[in-house]
Image 1 (tube, rainbow, N blue to C red):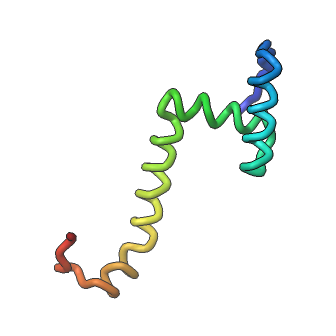
Image 2 (cartoon, one colour; image 1 turned 180 degrees about the vertical axis):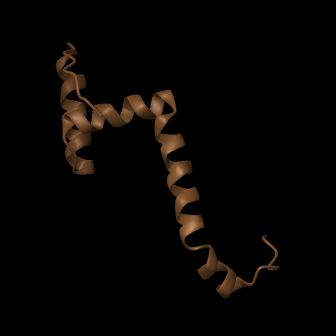
Length: 74
């Protein structure tokens, strides 16, 4: 996906908080802000659901072997 530059102005407290949160998460401020926007617009949730579905599809046979096809969920 192509990237575009977006310049925003925030007060020093907000900038400091963004830097601290990004550092605590081990990501850049840019990545942190991107994740916040995606979460706010629901893209992160959709990406998680798609990744979870792919995971389950990939490991379906492992789960079936471990728990059996007729295993009841709780």
